[in-house]
Length: 146
View 1 (cartoon, rainbow, N blue to C red):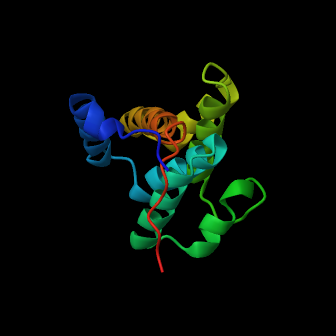
View 2 (view 1 turned 90 degrees about the vertical axis):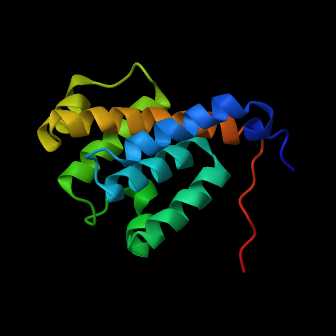
């Protein structure tokens, strides 16, 4: 059972969170990259609600199941593009240690993405970490599906 519903108890704050999410979705970052980043960040943060939601969203957008299955071990997989690898490396660095993004990791981001895309990647990673830090401590549960 969920501890409390932030959306109901702090609706203006929650609305601002949703508006930021909508702004990021309108940006130049590919939907595939956005969903992979959301899933990977949520896996690291142990946010069941967000893992479930973003796996389902990725599948609805046409993501291949094997790429989702292999995501926890993406470094060993041959299924990801260089841009996706850069985004995943950045996601892991920020999620595990927010001030720990090395120049090497950042250089892969700037090599793979245009500056505006990189800015939206930074925003997306920050956003998923924020969502995880709302949903996981509140014990948000995904819907039961058949």
